[in-house]
Length: 223
Image (tube, rainbow, N blue to C red):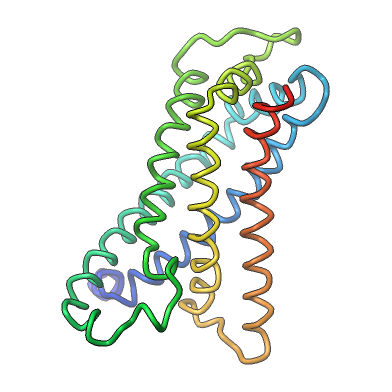
């Protein structure tokens, strides 16, 4: 087992972990966005509450949550560790080589962008996950926990709306670099297919982040 430990404690191994967990978390974003689109149904939140009830109490989903938490934990830990090592390794060469002229801002600040997203995630989990799992939320007409009411209340708070939208911009730039970088790290880099991967990455990043950002804006201004 020592070769496994040595591999994943190396710089290359850590990048592989980052890439694999990053793509896994991208799949979570898609599922989460699709589920949250129930918020736009004009039914007083019944569809969203039914979705939330299923996600909160289904045994299989609860088991998958363990993998999700592990994925987030690994991605965050390895990302911070890599950022720290890269910063230490660059040292003064960062200035002398003018690396800022050779790469976009967001690719050099993935740790900063990720930290902003992490801060938002903690606040988001506290507001919703914490209340639904450990609090006593109101019930809707179907007897489901009224998660919709929590959303409406949160999205009428201008500070939370601003944080939510800002976090989506941070996530957008984090994904713009991370999506393509993950495929490259995993060796899926080809002259013919790389441009397509870049395009898919841009479309994915914009659609997902715009979809999430639309929710607080819609509720704040129109509900």
